Image 1 (cartoon, rainbow over the protein chains, first blue to last red):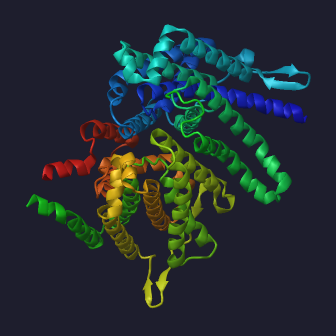
Image 2 (spheres, chains in turn yellow, orange):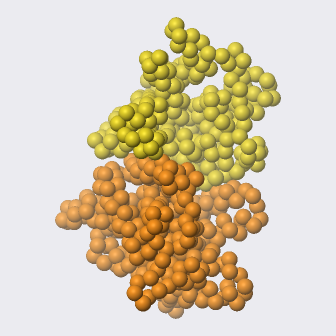
Image 3 (cartoon, rainbow over the protein chains, first blue to last red):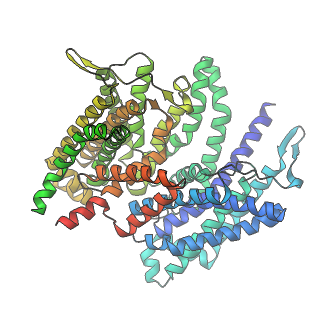
Length: 306
Length: 315
């Protein structure tokens, strides 16, 4: 009983971490390459999830709705970049925080206007609704396995894109020294738009995949945005590898904290104290992790700029 | 003449603020007493943030933590039977100062975006502690039975009276603004601005830059704690929402909107933002949308905020 519980929580942590990675990868690239503090990243995730819900309802097919939602969110991202974000690259971080926070406010109300204030439910595809038996006696929801698979596949693709292709080389050059890359002839404007749109698509993917697990609702972007920010700061801003390690760390620590800390405290503390302390400590765990990382390594685990 | 007007403007505003309860009563609009009081409380919080954000160049996205610690101190003490403002309010200030000393000592080691993020992380920790206080309402928050008792010997003020409480808030705000202005004009404040402009150089001249930044951070935290104590009394309600990161962002927005690094930027921003929200809520259910559009206009058309616009006109 106990080993399967641990295995289940490990898989949950992996799944959560991988979804965080999808968000954090786009955020860290935008941050590292354009030096843009983009609070609106979570809004793209929310928009992706809502578009997914609509497309799934309209087409009746989960598998058809995913690419449609990705494309539509990419378009939203492109419009956002051209209309607004592009004009913020040369501004200071404060102006960026203010402008992208404004985008959060606008996006939340627009979503409320279009889809209404009630949360939307999204069903996993029928073929993946049930659990599978991974080991004798160890059942795990098959849809969550799909998320893990998709997340790992995405991470691999992203790694190949960044590490092995010419476009990836430009991205890495931009992240380590923007001015030098521009002087060496990289078309920075086009690169920036492409990176932003890629980030938007990754957001949308996380939104579509997490839709059936979490509720699709207004404000879903704000909470996960903070977690994604924690991830990229732990990993080192601008580093996709750092985002991957950070995301898995945060996903594991958060899931394990929620699953095991209350029980662990029960063993040492009186029941009423433990019941109060457990959930609070579990929620705090990742922030303690981040503060500790920054205390010892003030620029994160894998700083992109040396 | 315009220069003289500019120097007189704070005193004119103070006179107007003193007159507001009379005007509101004469016009039978009691709502405005509470509304202006709320503006003054948020102005205090925003002004404290402006001290480190505007003059110290420290972009803290966790200022709501100190605001909330002040509010929770008053709330929890009151539930435990300590109703005296003379105990609860200094306790709120002291706890907020202590928290900002600890958080500042760790956070100020980092720079730039990392500083933004680590202050945010600490604020989130405080937020989840508040959510975890099941005995004191947890996620739902805490209703207070009444306002603090403001009595010391013969001096006995009934804070339950809306107008008396209004004047207490206004007096505290005025004293705090005087203090902030004195700090900015003093050698300490000049050193703080110098560090914002060029820290390496200030260190080279021989200033203890870390200590100066930390002291400023603690002063700002303590003042935010005072604002939180007042807010708890104003709302008669304390909840984790006071500590949420969007509250920190709102305070930052108030400072930027009002004018970052301008003496009265915090006041201008708090007044403009709260008044704007109030007016919008009369006309539309989608006030966030309108607010977002206004913020975008501010970013591109008035990057120095309202105080920046004013001072340009007067120069």
